[in-house]
Length: 100
Image (cartoon, rainbow, N blue to C red; front, side, top):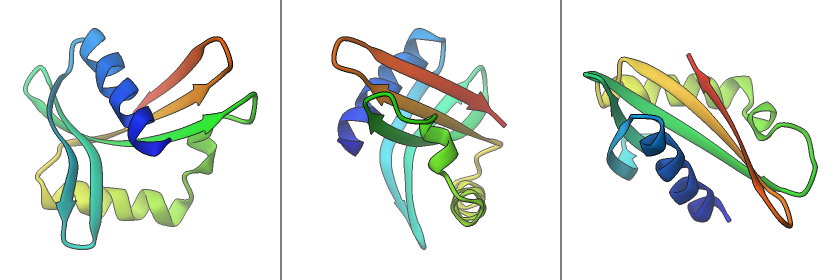
C-alpha cells in the first residue's frame, strides 16, 4: 500500500507543478519517499497512506519521524520537507498536501 500511495503522490505533485527527481531515496539512516523540485527548490516528501475513512494520514507522522525526515532531508540538501497524506477510499482517493 505504501509504494502505491507514493506513486499516486508523485502523480499528484506533478499535476501541481513539481518535478519528481527520485523515489525511495536511500540515505544513511533511512529513506526519503520522494525527492522533488518545486521551481528550483529541492523538496523531500514524506508520504503516508491509509485506507477507508480514518483520520488524516499525516496525523500518523510522529514527532520523532518528522525529526528523522528533517535529518534525512538535510543529507540530500533538500530546502523544504513536504508531507502528503493519501487516503484510499472504495471509490475515490483523497490527498492532503502540507508544505513546511
